Every structure is written in structure tokens, then in C-alpha cells.
Amino acid sequence: MTPSLVWIFFLLLFISVPVAHAMLGGAAAALWLEGKPMAVIAQRLYTPTQSFPMLAIPFFILAGNLMMSGKFGVYLVNTARLIVGHFKGGLGQVSIIGSVMFGGVSGSAVADASALGNALIPVQKKEGYPAGFSAAINSASSTISVLIPPSIPLILYGLVSGVSIVDLFIAGILPGVLLGVGMMATVGFVAHRRNLPRSPLAGGFSAFRMQMFAALPALLMPVFVIGALRFGVATPTEVSVLAVAYALIISAVVYRDLSWKGIWSAVVDTGLMTGAVMIIIMASSTIQWVLTAERVPQELAVWVQATFAEPWMVIIALNLVMLIVGAFLDLPAAVLLLGPLFVTIGNAIGLDLVQLGLMMVVNLAVGLYTPPVGTTLFISAAIARAGVGETVKALMPFYCVAIILLLLISYVPALTIY
Image 1 (cartoon, one colour):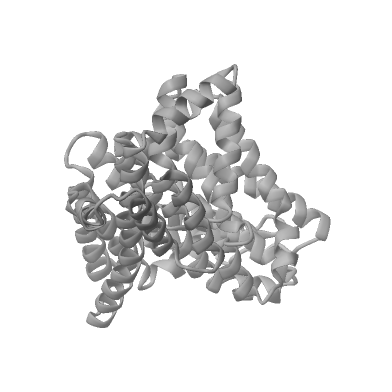
Image 2 (cartoon, one colour):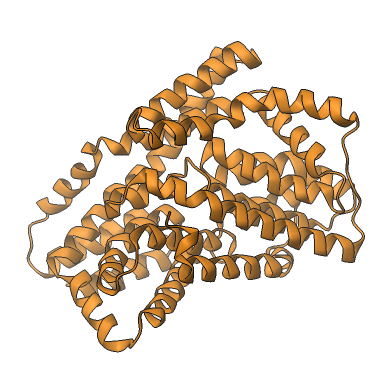
């Protein structure tokens, strides 16, 4: 049953069938060939929608959309520019600092790439940045969002693995900061070689104080989220609802830019994003049922242990598989597909599941700016009007930074286990 599922799934992907429908098609074919009841599909589609923790996803997305619908984006860019604009390649550095800040609000790399790309790439090009390099900075730096809480991919991994979402959020902070620092160093190196301009924002300390004061209420959202979770004030789902209330209050009272039109737009965008994630979650549930019925995770764990002599070799193999899969599947689908399989293997070799979760998210995030399916790559290239080949060439040093971070996470547990 399993080989037919795999072949049909990849065949459907090859002919450009959406990932969720390809999952359903593969599961349906496997069930039909084995004479299993098709009612399993309906049951498995329904089951994951009844998860209370799953409600955290739409509420965190809505909180980010509400916050970014008004003036916060302008304050964020100005604050970042005041912090790093005086460096060589200042606007490139702003893109990275902005991604760190934005990640704490949206938790979505795609939203980050679109919002910051539209704000910064046209200005970078006017200041002499090559189009491909601007697109490369934006597409790579936007993936910092999947590590900084509240991260949607980490929530998904927590749901399929049973790992505490609080632990995953806290564990993602240091790798997210390290990824940002590594990318800033890369931009600085390229900026000096290409003599890219500095882009300070006028006004000095007084302007910085004003902009930071304006952006601070929104930037405190991740502190609010982590604090509420860490001290047991509320569950992740309850915190996500509180985050929406916090976003509404900040937008209405502090920024005073909340309108019914803005609320409606944020709700519609949230519905579209949630629908795209939910259909993948529902479809992956059918795949997981088929694989579990065939005992694939257990057999795969036994095969891995018999094939690779040492745990460090298993970790290399897992990383290679995740990098390859991430290049062909969207991040949520890949997390839901690989999560249950790799958790079994991780348990078999004694790998901490929080560490595995961070490995998985970093690996699959690289796929967001890797052809042929890289979402942030194509968004950024389209905004910059740059060729994909030109952008990928400019991305090479960013790939090196991501791989170095990946090796550190894989072999230095102290970075993710506290």
C-alpha cells in the first residue's frame, strides 16, 4: 500500500496538482488498492479539525494581520533603519532586523517576504543594489520569522509531535537571533565588496527614541506571548486569543489607525491563510493514518538504526532528507508529512524532540528560498523584477549561513535545550 501512495503522490505533484489534493489522491489510491473502506478519508479529514490547540493558528495569524494593517510597518522600518542604517549596505541590514521584529508579530515567512519586500526592495534598487541581491536578502531573511515566536511551523510541529509549544517557542529564540546575525554579517561582507551605500535616517537619538517608542507596543507582543506561556497564565490557544485582543487595543488606542475596513481585510486574509493551512493539515491526517496502519514509522526507525552505525550519521541523513523535501513541498505540508516519521526515529536514537523540531523548521525554511517551489524566493524575485537564476546566485552565501546554523543546532544541543 505504501509504495503506491508514494508514487501516486509524487506523480500528482509532478503534474502540478496542489499538495493537499496530491496527499488525498495518494491516500485514496492506497486505500482502494488494498480494499480498505474509503470512509477512512472522511473520518481523517474531520478528526484534526477538532483539535483545540489548532485554534492558536488562525488567532496568531489574525493578531499579526491586525498589527501590520496600519502604521506599525512604517515604525518598524524606521526603527530598524535608525539601528543599522549607518552600516555599509544599511538597507539590506534593515531588511534583516525588520524580519526579526516582524517575526515576533506575524510568525509567517510569506507575510514577512511580502510586507518587507514591497517596502524595502524598490528603495534598495534606487540606491544601487543589484535586483538579484535585494531579492536574495528579502527571501532569505524572511525565514527568520519561522523561528521567532509565535511561529506557525513550530505550532504545527508541536501538534504532530506532542512536544510542548512553549518549549519550542523558547528554543527558537536563540537560533533565530543567530540566523539574523549570520545574515547581517553576510550582507556586510557583500556590501563592502560592492561598495553599497549607508542609509541612515536623519534625526539622531531623538528620532530613534521617538520611533522606538512608537514601535515598542507592537514589538512587545512576542514578550507578552512568551511570558504568558512560560508562567502558565494561559494555554497557547488562550494566549493567541489574548494576542488578538492586544493587537486590537494597540491598533485602536495607541496607533489609532484601526478601521472597520482594516479589520475586515485582516479577517479575510486570515481566513485565506488559515484555509490553506487547514486543508493541508486535514489531508496529511489521511496520509498519517495510512502510514501508521502499515507501521511505516516503526519499520523506518528499525531500518535507519540497522543502516547507520552512529546517531550522528542518522542526523546527517535526516537533515539531507529534510533539505530535499523542503525544496519540493511547502513548509507546513512538509512538517506535517515528516513530523510523525522523524519523531519515531528521533526517539529511537535518543534525539531530543525539541532539538529535532528546530532542525526540521530550519531545514524546511531553506526550501522557502530554494527552487523549484521556493515561495519567498519567487515573491522576492517578482517584487525586485529579478531573474530567479540571478537571485539564486546571490543567495549562495545565505545558504552557507543556514547550513552552518543547521549543523550547530544538530550537534550542539545547548542551543535548543535549556
